[in-house]
Picture: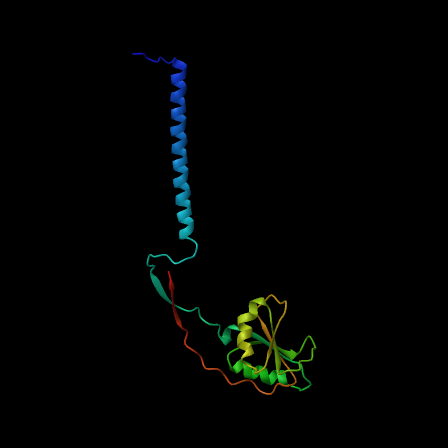
Length: 175
């Protein structure tokens, strides 16, 4: 029987290689599971509906803007005397706040019934004011406040009939 005798240096080298391979294998396994966990987290949050049932809440829609919350400047862009004053009185009776009643400060010719001028923050109020005059044209300008200008043109005759108030709808959305 012949025995193979190894030197101490070669056996320790082999043990070191074995420990290195085991360590590398464990690190690779840990990296695999870390990437798998991250991937499953990413896939779960991509916007697709999950299979779990989410509770729902019933809420009412945000309160709509009312005429009392809109400040209107009424301007006359025609040659008819007193048009802005009589129209402002009728607009006030519908619940709007009237700030200025005068001739058009821009002195533009408005060929249609009216122009509704507004800034970025006045868009919701302008939508309400647009319902006052049939055929009115919306004109966005660079103002920073939420006031709205109602500029009466040559074809203006009367305000449109008052719209009936609609109840605010309820919506169901996830909590």
